[in-house]
Image (cartoon, rainbow, N blue to C red; front, side, top):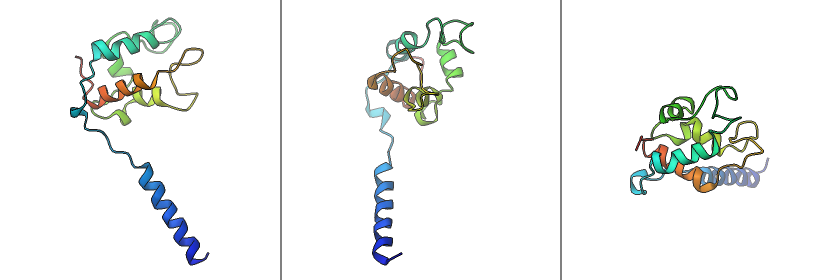
Length: 125
């Protein structure tokens, strides 16, 4: 491998690392996202219907309460990237993403609200 090729590969690798580096926002500087008025409607409108997480016969768990969401969606307050809820709705993997077809995926705004809510501590507010 030539010196020029090695340098090009090194520059490319550094550029990829720099571009992929993402910093968490300052969650305290963002408007507060509330569970009761922002997150609960997303969950109830997209997850708690028959055939999904709305009845005990259809899935392994229900998502009717704040406690259900925290427990079964493995929400890690302050850590969206470590929370199953966020990772599941943001997933690009057809096997993991929720809601499942034929239902529509969450909008980017809904996903951002979940992300910010978790980042702000995932409070029952």
